[in-house]
Each structure stands twice: as structure tokens, then as C-alpha cells.
Length: 306
Image 1: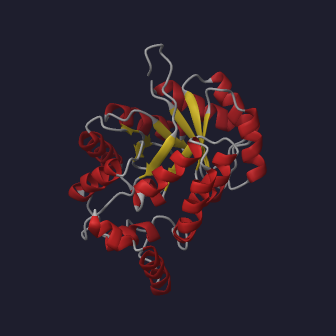
Image 2: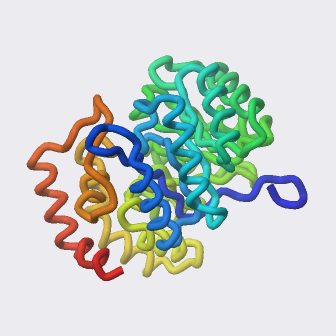
């Protein structure tokens, strides 16, 4: 919090961090620390472990707590660490959020309950109870393609206006009409973040405050430069970055996230391309496309030169 008791704005280049596993399927703490430092060196503003990209649905509660502890410990206060702590069970989401706060997280990314398909009143009850359980700022995560339910603008505005520590929205609906309505109607304290790398440029041009990025796992300095250029009103510079890396932004979703991004990170020597079932390695055709894109971008050469 700031000295006046209000939460610091959640803006900038924010990474949805992968969770590295060993070949035996255990948490790879050495790789996790390596990834944290790679992000900090690349200028990332906030690190979020245990989101969708971090395979949170497949983590045990003690593993999730440990991931957060390791990231907080390795960050050493150099950047803020917020943590995914969502569930389709309100009771479980509250427990995960409390555990994340105890582990040192400085904020919570809370996904809309999946599969249940709550009503508007259900979303309000869910997020209100999560927010009341912790003292941390809450980022509401709207991703209908994953959850099966959309959190409408009116619902988000009600939460933002009535729950003091709901201060940000990660919007990954890809519904630009909905996003524009949210941006023009939001209260001043509510930050809106792109949840889709391919839409970051467009959303920030409309007034969004940054991105929670998958691509930042691979190219943190690039995503940071795109966000910075938009904050500084350098649209031509931002557009050039967007156009150069648009292929990578989209290819990270050729198969279910985090299949592509973990493969690319393995090519970069940052972690193994090891997943927690039911997520499995990518198909050969997908990997060939990813190889071609990172070769075109010179990504491995850039990384080797760092």
C-alpha cells in the first residue's frame, strides 16, 4: 500500500509465470529461481506465479504455496510478486488466497469460477468473500474461453465500486466491445490489463494500463518495451514491436497454454518442457512452427548473447 492506505496501481508489464517441473514431475526450484531473475533482468514490473500459465489447476496446495514462497524469496523485493489463487469453489479460493498472503504474495489474481457458470450475484458473492479474506489487492481475471462464463461489465463495476481491494481486472474475453465499455465506464482506481498478448497494443491504445503476458516468459524486455512505448505515447514504436512479435504472440496459443511457451523456454535453456497431466507436450507440427518462428526472430541467438 501507499502511505495514504490505498493500494499501488497495478500497471505495466506483468508476467504470468510458468511453473517448471523436473523430468520426474516435481517442482524444479532451481529453474524457477532462474526464471524469476530472467524476468527481473528483462524489466518485468510484476511477477504472477500460479496462474493459468503456471498450471495452477494441477498444483497441490502445498506446491502452490511453495512456488509462491520461492518466487518471493528470489525476487528479494526487487519487483512485486502477486499470485494466482483462484478456484471454482469460493471456500477453496478463500483458502488459497489466505495461503498466498501468508507465503508473501503482494496481491491476488482471482479467476472467475470455472464450470459452475455463476450468475452475476454469484460472481459478486465469490469475489467479495475472497477480497474480505485477505488484506491484499485483488485482480479479477475474466477469461470466458477457459471458465465457460463471462463476467459482465456491470458486475465488474459493482465489484470495483463496492469492494475496496478489488483494484484491477485482467480482461481476456477478447470481446472488444465489452473491453471498450469497461474502459470507458471504470472508476479511476480500477486498472484494466490485457489478458491476451495479441490485443495488448489495441487495448492500451484504448486506455488499458498494461498486460499480464504469456510472451513475457520468453521475451520480457520486448513486452516491457511495448508497454513502455504505449505509456509514453510512442505509437509508431509500439506498433513496430507488435508487428515484429505478433507471430510469437499468437503461436503461444497454437495448443493449450502453456504447451508452446514451455517448449520455447526449453529451447532457451531456462526450464524443461515438462508438464503436469492432463497437459502434454506439443504435437511435432506445432513444435516445427515454433522452431521456425523463434529462428526467424533470432530469439535463441539473442538469448545466448545476454
